[in-house]
Image (cartoon, one colour):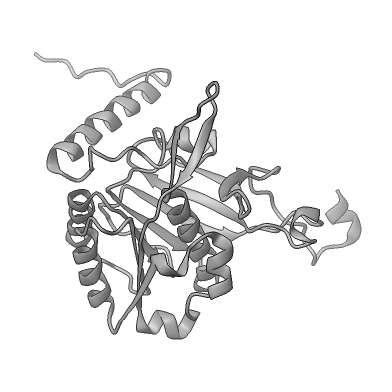
Length: 282
């Protein structure tokens, strides 16, 4: 009579999960869902890069969603910052172990649904310039329906002349087979793809990671930004095929074009304003 294997102990559970993740990653590579020729994109924050297994997988599809539609601009800013990071490749420096960042020209394709543009507006030129996206390296396309956005994304992800492809849609309930086709296209074209959504979705997806973005209060005053704090986001990694999930407060340094972990790296509850003073102070 065969005995059932004992369940893993709490101590062995993390190692078992890590082993299963590595096996899943190997299976995805064998199936062509992950590009092997492109190194991961380092976020630049150690705790996030560690969770991502070294950085954001390139030649893959990722989903970035706003926590609600009014936060769409926040999700847009995060996607643009990642596109800027992807256009800046690291190479060993001439002195010691320091690294020099060498910007490389790279084209970013932005495909947006007409309804999303009507609701949330067009990309803002000065904001793009501040983020580090040069106008000559940005192509914008509008599509009448969500299915047209997804079709254009699949075609564009296979094009090796593009560095980043971003598709902005409002539709929910995208079929798993659709995200799988997009993932295969990204791996085939060795292109970084972002599915930008105005609302989060919990449907099954072939995306390598899923992120939810919300605005976080700036740390004012800030002399470096003339009393206007840098963009600060609450970044929630809800799905990660390579490692663990997490939640952080992240700032974007537009001068050096890099991410920085905010001083308060974990979100905290805001003070309740509808309670008596003694209650809120306690």
